Image (cartoon, rainbow, N blue to C red):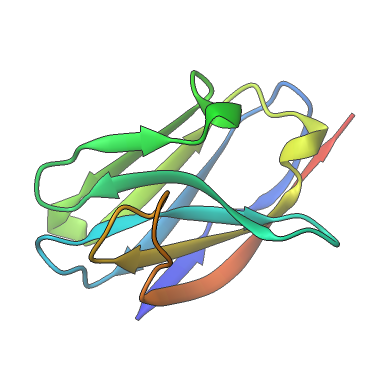
Length: 117
């Protein structure tokens, strides 16, 4: 239902844009989580599909921007000023409540982001 893409290898300070394609529900939230090796999956950014209201984890504020294109049923995560600690598998997800506070209902497959120092 959700297909993520756009990961890759980038040097520290570089940029990447992730995409998540899938049919969203009008009043649901869509967003991104990441999971570093040996660590838990954590929330990164979310957006309400209907109004486009955005929210972020403190660790990415000012560096990452989430947006959506309703016509393309796609959510983007534009990542700038990448750091080695951003290295992780990035998953898109969706659910009826804030993704920073409640577990998503559906997950997409992950896409690997690797930031070299």
